[in-house]
Length: 258
Image (cartoon, rainbow, N blue to C red):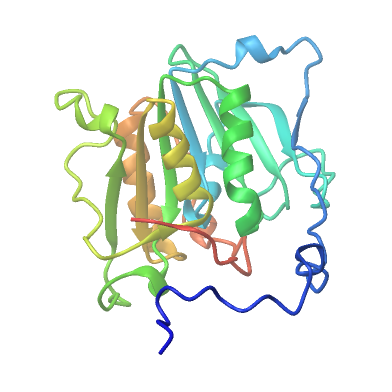
């Protein structure tokens, strides 16, 4: 009797070159690009002490309320039709890059459109090829589908994840007095890709995720965090401004980061 463990498998009905004929090749995507508002701006000048990346609706809304900032450029993806508006708004479908008008050498990047899963890692790589920060703060929302446990509808939550380089700076953390994201819960998408890129490049970085995704309490929670990081920045908005726009209507599934 033949041994099924050692017997050679039967030959395939297809030739090797025919096996991939049923799957069309994925179209290649063009590389992102940076468009500067000032033609004298150079890539060598983008080396901030702190880079704040806004991915959540509350953080995008708050960055637009900072009066002491200057628009220095936009990140452009060829496959996404971005807004062409003279005055940036939280409702624009664009990715704005701002500098803070003080001596802290801080940059903001505000992603105001959903990044497809297949683009997250390439965009994170491109971003840190063009911007060379000392520290990075990423602001994202908790996704209920990735959270282990039930998210309370009437309670504000906030957690963080850090690179190893940030954890070693026990006395000088970017974000202090905040619990770590619960074990078993997941972070995915561009936030995970950016944190992974920071770890790869050995950059001090913290990812802060908050709940709920929208609303007055969410804005106040993120505002309190930012004021702890940037105590001299004034967020000029009235109570009527606290209604947050839903910047991204859908989120693509992506590789997950624990």
